[in-house]
Image 1 (cartoon, rainbow, N blue to C red):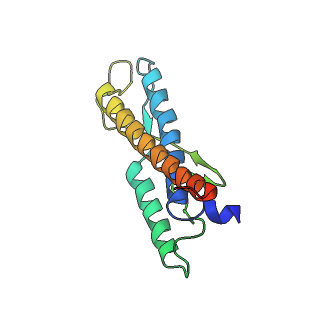
Image 2 (tube, helix red, strand yellow):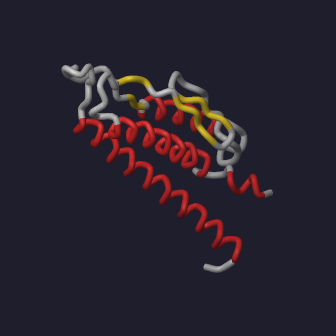
Image 3 (cartoon, rainbow, N blue to C red):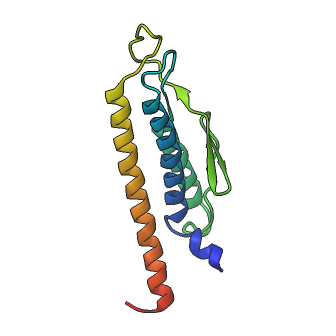
Amino acid sequence: MIQGLLDSGAMPALERLVQFTGARHKVLVDDVANLSTPFFKPRDLDPASFQATLRDAVESRRRRPNPTRGELDVRDTDQLSFKDGRVEVRATRMDENILFHDQNNRDLERIMQNLVENTMTHNAGVDMLRNQFEMLRTAIRERV
């Protein structure tokens, strides 16, 4: 009964979104912390790859007899492995920047832009999940 409440509607997709953005945030913060480390190569997770994987999972769920219920079958990618309740990441190096004399190819502006965009996406996903839970709470209390 409870599982039917938690895997219906947009909740599974929002849960995966928040997991991805949380994992990407850790990778980006590590990049910022190591900007001046010699031989450090910044890493990142590809949001487009995650979006494509999530889109495929949602489309697959829509083809089921009851398209608004059930877990998402999110397939693993080169960078992401989806486990029960978590995501494991293998970030790849970003090699498109200028190589400095200390063999570091940092680009602070790009990393900070990615960090801000990721934070905004994460906050939006958390807000939408919070709204979903608030609707459930209202329905359980039977009050409007």
